[in-house]
Structures are given as C-alpha cells and as structure tokens.
Image (tube, rainbow, N blue to C red; front, side):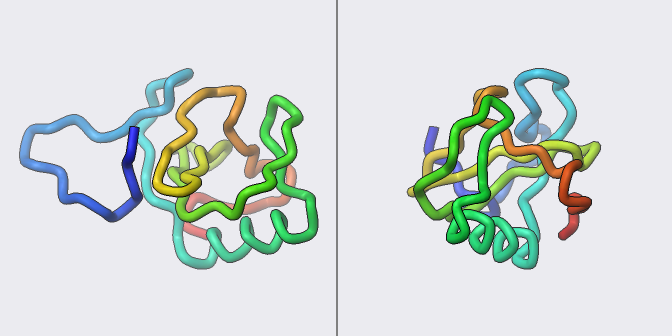
Length: 97
C-alpha cells in the first residue's frame, strides 16, 4: 500500500485510514513529530511495539486518533500492521506533535 500522508486528497464520502486493531481514525503526523521520530531513529531508539528496531528513516507516519500509537511510512510504504506500530505513550508525544 503506497500511501504518503498528505499525498492525496480524500474524496467526499471516502473512508479515511483507520488503525487495523482499534479502527480508530488515523491522521498524518506533524512535522515536529516526524523530526522527533527521525532523531530517535538516528540514535537507534526507534522501535516497534513488537520490539523491532527501525533501521530505515521514516518518511511519514499515521497517528492513531487516541495518540497512543503511530504507523510509520518508509519509502512511501505504510507499515499498517499492529506489530509494526510505534508507541507514543512512553515518551509523552501527542498526536499533533
């Protein structure tokens, strides 16, 4: 699935992206949050909730409506699997960044 946040306009009546686990809506991550994620990745501290360290630099992200998780976009491919989600709760980040 090649979906870059902000890359396409949703047509009226089309459903937005949702979390595959909770079905809460997803919103594009802010520029500030993306920079924070990039910094964590450079330090080797960016990991999925499944424990996998992220070696690639995220090019975007989709934040879950409750601000608890996000789904990375790497090289234009959204990683929309719950095991690939990144927790935002431990570092206190918010959905808007």
